[in-house]
Length: 510
Ligand code: 6PG
Image: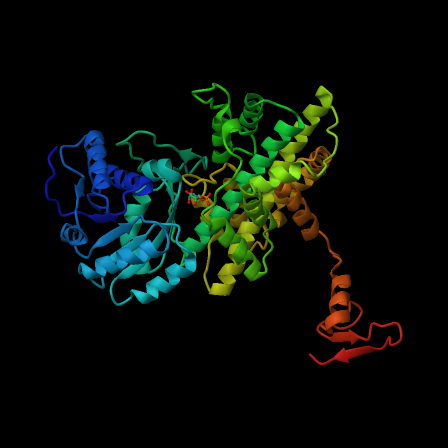
């Protein structure tokens, strides 16, 4: 098929893995694309792939060799999608488009994992040049190709234009069952079902929500990794045996994409050794920053998200491989007691429940964080809608997200997911097993930071009384920071001369 000049619906810049697949997804859904990348090889690759997959006689992707050519190929006002790395590259492309003559009523959609505050700042900075809209995308390369979860935010005017396109390319969920409707073949489109694309709010809100999605993703992944560690090091199971257990669990409340891919990773054999590849992978985890941003935001807002923060720490600890290797020769752990077959089965059941409870905590933390951020930044976030668009397409997609949707539909003001009747029952029914799994892993010396910090979170959140009374006493002792008393009117502050010689209580004006 020869390249013909088209007046295209959408301009697309950045043809890496995500960009290329989004272009092909847009093309499958009937949109013509003018595509540009700094690497001409990438432009040619997307054209070649489109030509091999295109079953119509009309070319769907037009390759461009410059920003100016890209603009000249688009219907006005121009709609341009960016899929470039977060940070400086986004600004470089914006400046280049300004140089190429982009107009104030043109729309640029940033689909990268931008820091949400950068998005807020960019929308203001480029206001007189063009309309910056953002839409975080989750789902990796397969999601981008066959239906991602999309978290758009920014100008409602821009959203009106983007909405039909986004709803067409997004993952779809069966409205009756709440289950994903899966596309797997090029050219396949799904026109019914509920799209996993919903307007999140003003500039920055969508990227914030995606950031929290990634924080939950970190926690979810770490919880699975800790379960693997307990089963492997604590129970001495093989990768195939662990995969069998995870596969079984994936039929129950832990049903999720991350469990599904973990089964595949565990079963995969290295082509050269024919042993599980996972056991040959160096145990140092990478990270690009979105989990860290989530943990930082939780600290800034004073919203506890320890499971998410612990998942970030776990990646950091893993990266200290040399230090860990050295410490492993110096620091003792417990003797690993031999377990009977019955005891092993009990641990497996307890571990399942521990994972489920920790997972509920991670989501409870993420949703509470979004609630506090919305209050802080003046956003109106619809949590049922956010849970809905995470039911398919995204990395944390899980059957469980239907239950979260239901919880927020029952009560949109819910302060914490653990207070919802359904989730409270899930936790109450399993908390004993959760504790037993933690005890077992601790006595085996297997680190289970996410599982155990979640339990501490659960126990703290359900404690009417915490030892912060002593903490307030300590603060007042050394810094005269004052405290309130439970037997006196609320809001009155007191300070005490704590030394044994002077015991007088002084009421401080507030
Ligand atoms: C998604 C993923 C995606 C990316 C992560 C990886 O939702 O599609 O979250 O955004 O894979 O950013 O992050 P790390 O490299 O930090 O694990």
